[in-house]
Length: 144
Image 1 (cartoon, rainbow, N blue to C red):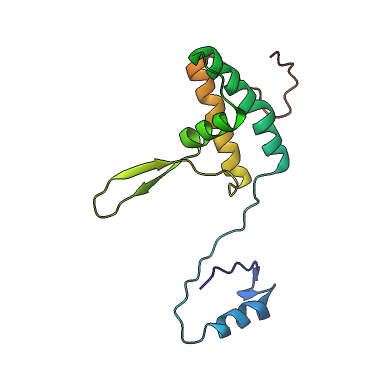
Image 2 (spheres, rainbow, N blue to C red):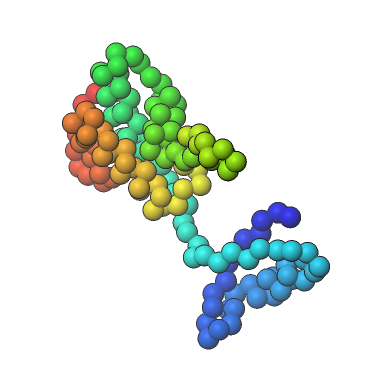
């Protein structure tokens, strides 16, 4: 079964939106096992967040890595480095308990998750290189 996501609202114990669609989906699964998950919908990362990441965070990290490592990294390489270290996750083998760290794409990040990723990038840049990455909309002139 493919995952179906339907947004509704509950008022006085009743669904107020997409009620018939929800009932149709339930009816179409007659005799099958389904899983119901309830959560508040989240907004995907925004275009301004993406622009801030690629226009501010990545270039500053790119410069910091060049100066500290003596190597030139592409924006894509820096992006992978940041995702792996600050937006990563672990895949755990349940039989052995071994874990493997993987880079998680930020494409599915909510606006909150993306800001948490940005904060980790800013915090570690400060801790490692004593570099302050400006906050979004902060009025600073960057020199490269």
